[in-house]
Length: 127
Figure 1 (cartoon, rainbow, N blue to C red):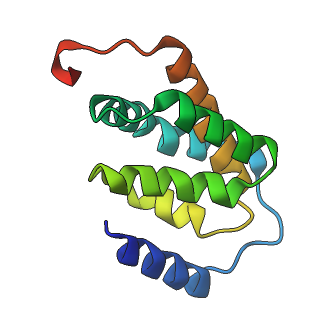
Figure 2 (cartoon, rainbow, N blue to C red):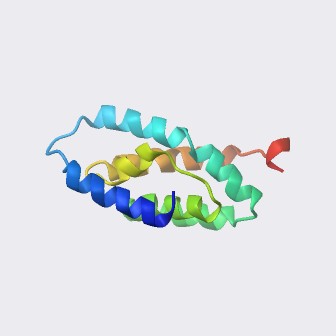
């Protein structure tokens, strides 16, 4: 998915499905965990394999999350994925288009990211 496709999908999703007034946060978080879990480790490994500054990326993600810049965190993840030709799931894009769900998606991603950052061990196929 190119950046243009990502933007177009977000704009179309916002038009078609306006943010609901109330959401089931537990269900939304479970969905966000599934979405984030489906690609975060692979993205982390791909960035590592391409010699990205993982400490710098992690620090920036933490700063975005701690300052409640959830949209920034989600978009930064997309930009990282795009920079290494990694395709994010369409569900990630759809969820990131809904303002009420972005903080939940952000929380799920940072949780996975921090877990991988603390325990990531490259495997033979990632080297």
